[in-house]
Length: 234
Image (cartoon, rainbow, N blue to C red; front, side):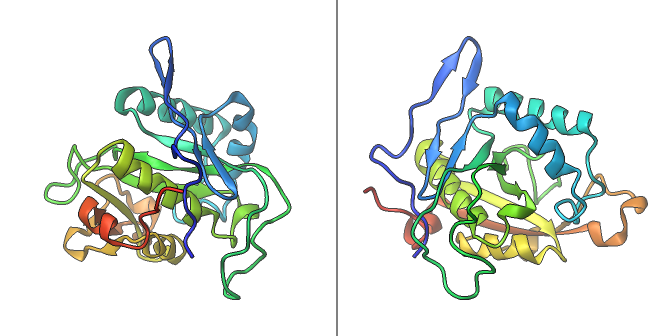
């Protein structure tokens, strides 16, 4: 069974502090997807400095770059009304996955684990990625791997994308070798759209040729509504 967003209504209402938009809190069986706090900066910097986490990126991030990314995430929330949520493991939930999981349904550890959310890519690829494209993405600390937290969080974000924010399509893309992320894309209902694959417009030879070509996966609102990924109100 796929993780579902909990509670009815499903979302904690959005509020505003001055001109700053605050993302609605999303809750699942084991996770809270919430706004960022300054307490997240240290563990986020540690995550971004981990070479395993950043394997499919050009490099790890410095502390300053990591902090700047959080500021960018916050600005995206103001500009778009949506962005990347901080993901917090809140506690154990029922084990719902089979023996293929590399660990138990709950790690025993709680707290900040990374991010999952939807953003507008910072580049355009004509005919493939345009100014209206919205991408779903995730990045979790290594201690949170193997428990399908990314799947659980991404399922909740897709529900918000289509139900709350009224999006008509969500895409995701990654390099060919990033099989872990591709598995999450497939589990949450995205499908390969190879006609939209692209060479990253900011690619540099120093990155290595393996980071140039990107696969595109996508799901539109109609497909999401028809799929088993769409959660029912509880």
